[in-house]
Image (tube, rainbow, N blue to C red; front, side):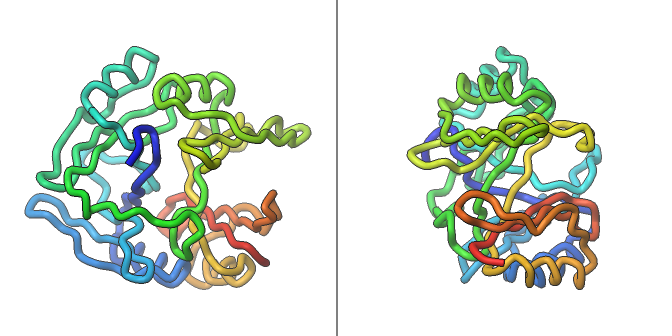
Length: 251
């Protein structure tokens, strides 16, 4: 795994059984128990491969949300660099013995993510970007995208890819954490209250997926919409209040 790459995703929520049923119905994920003696934890799987995790909201509280993990070769050193660049460490580096070392952080504009390093080479298998049930895209709704990009560029070496002008909505800037673009960022619209990261899960067809979201008790907030690729997306809220999105190669 290369420093600066997203490699894992968790949803923290108020009802893990309900969340497991919802995402199983919508994305087609299976589940495996990944609990430790100190933490209840469920693995979401696609074709038997772990792709994301599910856990209760941690002590201290937060709204239900999806969180992305960015690889750091040295989590402690990267936390210090992040703070020096104006970011904030909300939970200092902590070990899940034999599995992962992680810290909960946010960028200078308040968008949260985790810095982490796997301690077990088998715990986080690589997942092809287009694999059904995998994570197909990462998206930052920034307070102001240019300064946000500069932060991630300096911290992780991210590079700019293609940019799309979206009229009154401004610029949508693609970014790469390696050879290929893996996500995009833009200055958030006023309707989005705070800067945040969002994650897109791969499905086969977007219209059918939208119907599954609604049938399972979630909400479609935006879309279906066509985006360059061409691909089709919807942005959604699960029944417990966590934001997520879906992407598909066809309607």
